[in-house]
Image (cartoon, rainbow, N blue to C red; front, side, top):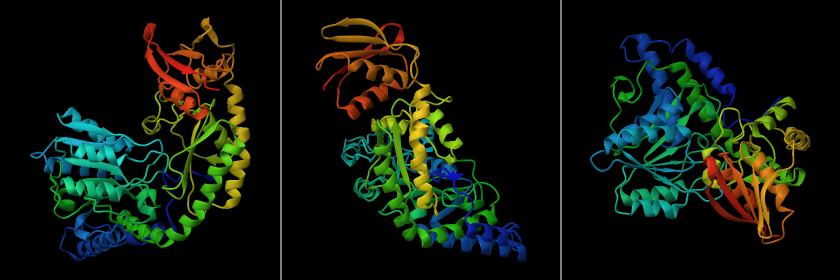
Length: 463
């Protein structure tokens, strides 16, 4: 089995395993106690903090260990907002942030705060002009949240430029560095940072929260005497030691691995569109993580495609709208305006070989073909209206990717300049039909409400 889902989690790094086992004997006592066992545990905790701080690029007393990366984000957002509540209750977040950030934003909004969502380019990269406008529109901001690199498509964000804009406006910037920290420190004068150890081969259950000196910060209640009130509960010192040791180890390996994996990802990016027709590789082709590539295959069910690849021996992930758990597209793909059908995220772990990538590329066409064959509609598209200017297709009750399949089947039967209207009640169609038009160079004319809760999507044949 080839594990190609490193962006989700990694197995324990060998250094993490060694450090964890070694720390079990000396890291069990309460580091807040003055006896010998407590002092020994405190020494381990302090050493781990210094090591992690050096890897992050901050002072040890600015770094807090939390029970998870999600908890680090929630605490960081809540604490920064509380610290600046007299200035503003407005939170700015990019439209492609991790769900943990969006959940925190939702909680803030429910409590009476306001949230402004910042748009991104089609590559998934923040539009810094939108950030500049939001910071200068006369409505003060309390906090800006921006990931260092996107977890679904790998696009690197302009953190340093965003930090300059925030600094000039006197607004703190919180960076979610979960995906990029394994590859090196985050550049720029950011104010807060969060990360998660299981993303770099450390133990699950350890997160990092950095709050720079001078940042107004009020830890959310209830208060706890540990970790300066920023992380409640007894410290898991063996896991913390292992997390810090493995972060230092992966940074030592990062440059060589990044160069090697970048070449493998470039190969996937180049070959997938050649091997699989009607496929779109999404995300920034240059400013990206070295190990991650995402593509979407038209006319394919995302969940079925993941299962097909799993049976073929490849563990991958997806941001597809076509899953049993949700009928709405990934918020990241939706914000980018790209295809969500048959979405596949490949994130290569350290040590991935060229042979594994070649086997994946050899397997992919058959896997996609088998899934597409299962999704051929049982009947011809239902045309409910037809005239010299175009046709109307009834795709009501049909789920992704069938509305797009029927659009593709019909548009070739109308003359250039004619309009195909697709009636659909599938939420995914709102994203996939415009994205299909962009990919196939047809003119998307927009949407309007139709009867019975349906939406009418209008497409003009351009060629």
